[in-house]
Amino acid sequence: MNLRAALQLGRVSNLPTVWTNVLAGLALAGAFPKPGTLIGLLVSMSLFYTGGMYLNDAFDRKADAKTRPERPIPSGLASASSVYLAGFLMIAAGVGIIFLLARLSPGGSYAPVVFALALAAFIVYYDAHHKSNPIAPAVMGLCRALVYVTVAAVAGGVRIEVGLGAAALMSYVIGISYLSGREARPGRTCP
Image (cartoon, rainbow, N blue to C red; front, side, top):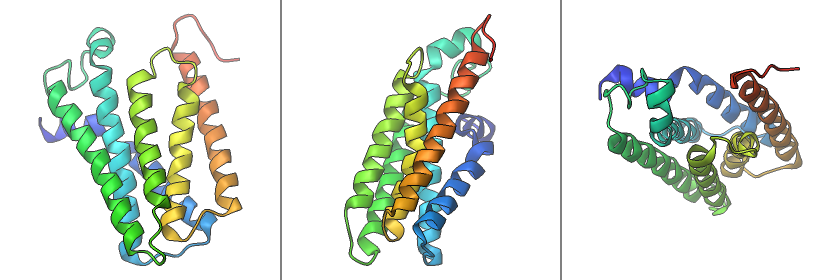
């Protein structure tokens, strides 16, 4: 797999949205972590996102072969097995970083690890089942909301503000996902 295919699989142009979610989660938690913790959170959430994008392409490879043959797997630029492996390894590394950050934080709670494992599970579930799944927008929204919650749990705790912000973000992502899904269907238009 060449660098261009790797970047295309990871949809890296959207990574800044993940970074702003990290910063928003920290702001809502009222947390000002040390630079090492901030970098760890940014890297971890970037790995979750990029790993999820890889898995999305791996799970969608058969549909992409028909409708998007230019994607890296159908075009032969990457094998499905290498994309699956890379995706799962990135998500595992994201969980591992959260584990290390949680153990190094004051109090050393396992709550951030539980949230990170939930995030990993929902990412994989979404990627494997999003086609024609009526709850797919809610699962995607939950993934983004879990970024806020996981980051806040590492950096000092999940306050009511974090929950409210996560709920607002989830609602926004559900709405955007629902509307974009309607636009993508032939013969369907948004209201």
